Every structure is written in structure tokens, then in C-alpha cells.
Length: 345
Ligand code: NAD
Ligand code: ISE
Image (cartoon, rainbow, N blue to C red):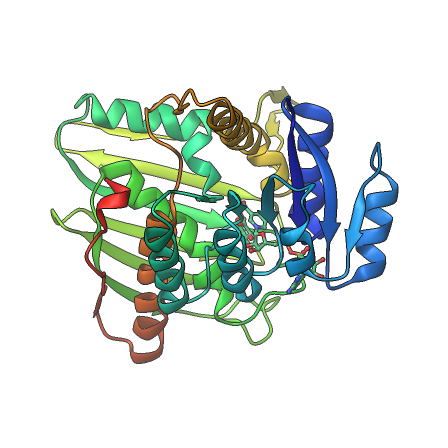
């Protein structure tokens, strides 16, 4: 039986996820939508097959008996209340990253889930499902390059979405590398430092680019270039430096052309192009888990885990909270983490 999904937030990524749930993946049906822009939600609903309800409020959608599971794609500051409402209703919820924009709000979600006694929340840290990132992690885990010492990351966007605020470079963009670092090395991040440099002329009041330096429990150093207005395209790079060698994501251009003494290859326009397969896989994994929960067989994904949890969302946002302080003060800041509840293994 198809999982009946309600989607909150029908903006850029909301519509992309609705498309994949409707046209690409198996096992679900979008039955309800909500957006604070009611006209937008109605337009999106009208284009979908079947009878799709448009709810005036997120709470109304969550309470709808026809909705089995909720997808939250509103902007970050709205996530916490919507995820908490879904948990209170006992409904599984997939929340786009970040889980919430503050460590405190993420902790409220973790506490609510722990009180509920079961894992209902998944967070959209889709890079964990990207084939290239998975292969990089496999190489590192196999010990092929020796013990990891450093990781160099580049996170470049051609431009920023309308909701973007000055802190979003950290809470909305760099937060991906905070999650990738924890996942890649299976360690928490302990300290963070930020350097601001000459500002990109396209960036208005946003400090862009930024150089973020993370350090993990065992001392691994991770540097992250954040550039969010670098017009040429969407460019994600990652290289792990080990004691004996290095391993890096390959070039993402599927084809390179050599012509007239030049070489060209496509750079993705944005995350929807670069991570299309990762989003498909993360959603298929979530749907498979929900369907097997409905039928009681306890699905886990290829790694044997249940995807990025509320705890993972909390831990990444704890790092982004510390990073905001590091950017403001210019100091190296320690990450504050609450004890990890048993619910998260
Ligand atoms: P967007 O601005 O295009 O869309 C957000 C939508 O949410 C808008 O239509 C807006 O009207 C609606 N909205 C805002 N507040 C709301 C509320 N309280 N209730 C209901 N609707 C509300 O933004 P976007 O680019 O689609 O990003 C949305 C979220 O998805 C953000 O958290 C962003 O970080 C995340 N995102 C993740 C990825 C990824 O790679 N995993 C990529 C893009 C966006
Ligand atoms: C956006 O919200 C995403 O999550 C993208 O993956 C990221 O690259 C971008 O910087 C964010 O704004």
C-alpha cells in the first residue's frame, strides 16, 4: 500500500521532492500540501494527479487522517514547530535540513522523540546517499589511505535562494559539511574557527566567502570553503588526506569535450542537478522504511542504519551554532553537545 504523504512548503525543493515522490519513486502518493503562500500550494496541488488537499495551516495538514507521513520543506526557522507537531501526532516526518536553525530547537525535537519512545524523524542530509560520497567513505573506512588526517571541502553555489539571511552561509550551507564530517569519520566535531576574507561583490550584506575550520574528537582537521555567489555553477568537492594517500570525489561532469585546443565539461547548475540521485535514494530509503514499518518488517538502508536522525540533525546544528559564535568573535569555539540518548544507539 502506498504511503500517503503530506508536504509542507511547496517552494524549490518542496516541488522537486513532490515530483520525485509522484513521478520517479515507488511506494508513495502525495495527498496533501501546505504553504504560507496559499496560492502557490493550490497551484502545485492542481498539477498533481488525484485528489490532493490544500491545507491552510501546517497543523491542519499534520492532523489530516489521510496523511500517513509528513515532509517538511518550509524554510529553516519554521522547521522546529512543524516537526514537533508531527512528532506529537505520532507521524513519521522527513525534515529537510537543517532540522532547525538553533541547537536549542533541535534539542527540543530530540527530547520530544525520546519522550515518544520511537524514532519518527529523518533529516534531509542527502549527501550520505550520494554514490560518490558513499564510495569515498568506503575507501576511507577500508583503511586504503591509512588513518585520515585532514579533509578539504569546497561548497560553492552560483547564487542564493530568496530566504537567505547573513547567517545562512553557516546554518543553511556549511551545515552540510558539518554532517558529512560526522558521517565520514564517525566522530563528533569538537571545535570550530571561521575566517572571513575579501567579500564577493555579488554578496551584498552576506560574508561570502568564508573559510570554516572544524576539528574532530581524534584531531582530524577539516577546512571548508563556503562560496554562495560564485556565478559559474554549483561545485562540491571533497578530498580526504590519509597517512598513506588521499581519496577525493571525482569530477562530476559526465562528459568532457576536447576541441580547438580546449577542454570543456558541464558544471551542475545547482543542488537539484548535482544531487538528483542522492535525493532519490534518500527518499526511496525513507519510503521503504515506512512501508516495512507499516508491514512490521523493520527495514534498514544499505548501511544498516535508519538514515540521518534527529540526533544527527541536532549534532550538525550544534556545530553550526558554535560556528556562528566563531564567526562573530573570531575565536576558536568549542561545540556544546548534550549527552546522546540511548534511542540513537
Ligand atoms: P524556498 O524558499 O524555495 O521554499 C520554501 C517554501 O516554504 C516557500 O514556498 C515558503 O512560502 C514556504 N514556507 C515558509 N515558511 C513556511 C511555513 N511556516 N509554513 C509553510 N510554508 C512555509 O526554499 P527551498 O530552497 O525550497 O528550501 C526549503 C528548505 O529545504 C530549507 O530548509 C533548505 O535548507 C532546504 N533545502 C535543502 C536542500 C538539500 O540539498 N538537502 C536543497 C535546497 C533546500
Ligand atoms: C541549500 O538549502 C542546500 O541545502 C544545498 O544543498 C546547499 O548547497 C545550498 O547552499 C543551500 O542553500
